[in-house]
Amino acid sequence: MNSTHLSILKPEALSAEVHYVVTEAMQKSHAGVIVTPVWVGRVAAMLQGSGVRVGTVVGFPHGTSKATLKAIESTSSLKDGADELYVSMHLLPLIGRDFDAARGELLEIVRAARATRRDAVINVIVEAPLLLSLGEGRADESIAVACRAIRESGCDGVVTASGFHRSGGASTTSVEALKKHAEGAPVIAMGGIANLSVANAFLSSGADRAVIDPAR
Image 1 (cartoon, rainbow, N blue to C red):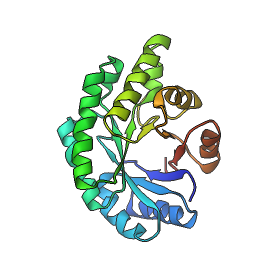
Image 2 (tube, one colour; image 1 turned 90 degrees about the vertical axis):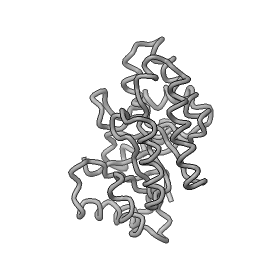
Image 3 (cartoon, rainbow, N blue to C red; image 1 turned 180 degrees about the vertical axis):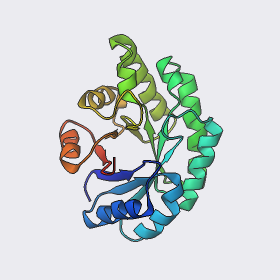
């Protein structure tokens, strides 16, 4: 297995498109596939025994659902067969550098998810391009808050972007900024990565994992 995942997250994805991405992941030994929650049960059945992990998104793409709803979505997807979650954080606490609020949201999600499946991997999307646009001092503080909240809530990985926010997708600058504060937590390049060549460039620049979205 390699360090790349495939994703198909566009809301209008057809069954044939999802099937194609899942088949591609198995044939080319990608580490996992990330789909929207409605597809998790079907994709988990397709991937059973393949060694390819099933990922899904939570509160996606804007992160504005209440933490309680994100917790419910997390547990539902894990029961359907998801191995990994990609949680869109509420951005306001990050912009305002409110550590307690950021950590509190994630703690509620983590408690619910791990009660359902102890070994669930919980990654958190922070929209780093947006945080970087705040200006040098504020950007660094906001990213530090995001990474600390992720670590101290018991989450696993830090994800650059959803790819659906107007601030943009993954960039090497985002990866570098997150690496500065991740303190060992995996940094995942995600958002607008169209192919394996681009994904490998992110891995070479320091990302621990890259998510390819070939359907966008």
